[in-house]
Image (cartoon, rainbow, N blue to C red; front, side, top):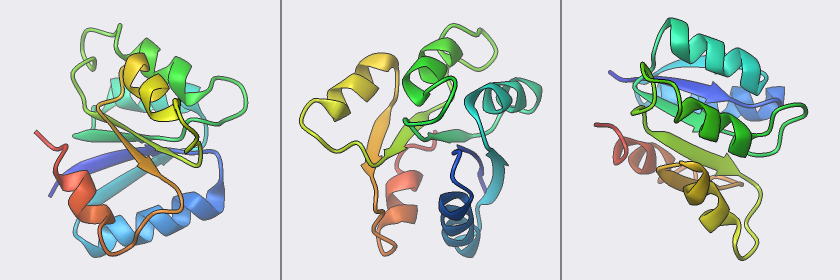
Length: 120
């Protein structure tokens, strides 16, 4: 099954998403900040990246834009997983280079299917 890298600063969110994805057979790697997530993606490229947009230090928009400049990993699908659900937020994430956008709180019943549609 696919390996997903989840970049998220909140430990509770990481635990919830990890449990859901693992229940559907996904392998989940986690990073608690964007810099660590970029390093992990470069050293062991995942099949997909779930990116929180609001993190201290480097935010998800900046991290996504940076990943898109890195030759070895620029084609990995990146899905914004964020509580930012105001008008214009989805467009900001897509303009930064995200392939998709999932708002928090996530729908446990549809989350794995939403992720699967982005796997190439």
